Length: 331
Image 1 (tube, rainbow, N blue to C red):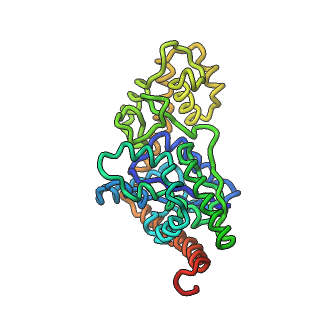
Image 2: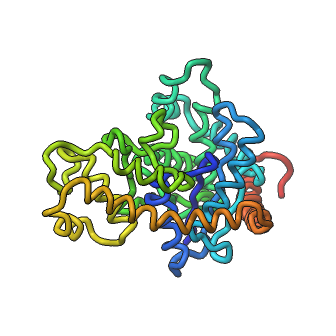
Image 3: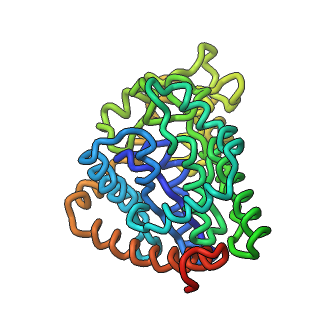
């Protein structure tokens, strides 16, 4: 069974990314059910909006260092940069030619981003789900971690794979989503009805793993809750408190019910202080490890190994696809 995930190179990841994805990856890498564990930096996806080339390369390296600092083991996980495996872009074109404009225009993320764009909307912003499908299908991935906001893209990937298989014969594995039950969606600290995102215009809304520790403490203490003073899990009526309970559960390993009982006689100030200290206890060693790695040769060694292995797998699949549809000379 093969596990695959990609993340865009922002250079930093939020507490939501970490608790909803990376922390789970660290656990999953040790499970014997996976024959392959692939993680890639989705730099081709990043250029759907303008990027500064120096910042982009710095962010790629920073993200790899963070992955390693969080506990991903390069002896168990292949980490690589998407653009260093040309087959991603090549199969992405094939997927575009097997998809329909109507399918892409229905993507919720495209419609949301289009509304926020001040200038022209790039073609890549519309078609990048085709590239995302290629990312997954190149490796016959069985499980793909999928947030609720990305579920639509995985459904499109499945549709494209089945359409191709029906037309050209069995070629692609049909992937399934991996959605963790707890912590799959950490919400904004200032608007707990929205997902935590580093692109939020309000820096108090999110915690980044490389944030100053005092800043993390202040952000949690100022997190929006409500006025009734009761600590209980109720996403609809108490989204702020429920979000903090989810965060505390994820970093402490204690079930939410147990935490609710623990804080039933407590106030919000004490509760927030404990959440803040628990988060800092989780993040501080990650930051220390990151600082050791960021300027070391380890990052390039990991990326070289990941690139070579990914190219080996991807080129095998791409050759099979090209033969199926008649591109080039028979291989």
